[in-house]
Length: 111
Length: 115
Image (cartoon, each protein chain N blue to C red):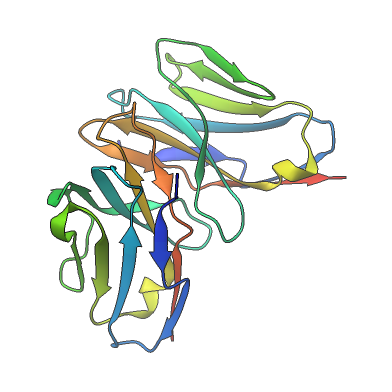
């Protein structure tokens, strides 16, 4: 119930390509779904987030797609750049149970 | 604004020794979190404070881990005695308040190696 699953574990994309990372959850009480970006030696930083009453949210090159019935959500990075190379964590939140993080996806964007 | 400050950045100790980590949150942030991030995994919540009170410590191994947040500002996390499996990055985060409208701001963490 508490687990957030994330795939793939690692991803290699050419510069200019689309990076897609998928997450799934079980607990329907979650009501907020953020994505965090983490560079080596740094703490995670909030990238973009969505609430379940919206099916898609876009901020620049980053888009979250949310499927409430399937309990799945995904991060799409358009026109991926070498500077996007980092580890990405999806997370799920509700007030009583706090943030639960996925295991992370290591993205490498080749120049 | 200044970010979340953590020290030390790195710590190497032998098993059964004790260690302490320090965190200074962003000024005005009432909520403070300690997370454990084992290599290749996502952060796992150890303890959450609201001001100087504990909100959630359900995943804190209380036989060896302790944390305090005196005066509702900075916080320390202690491990005594350390085990090999405690090797991880310990992240401190803060937010203005509880709730999804208050995003987490993470520090850069303390990397602990237990030998």
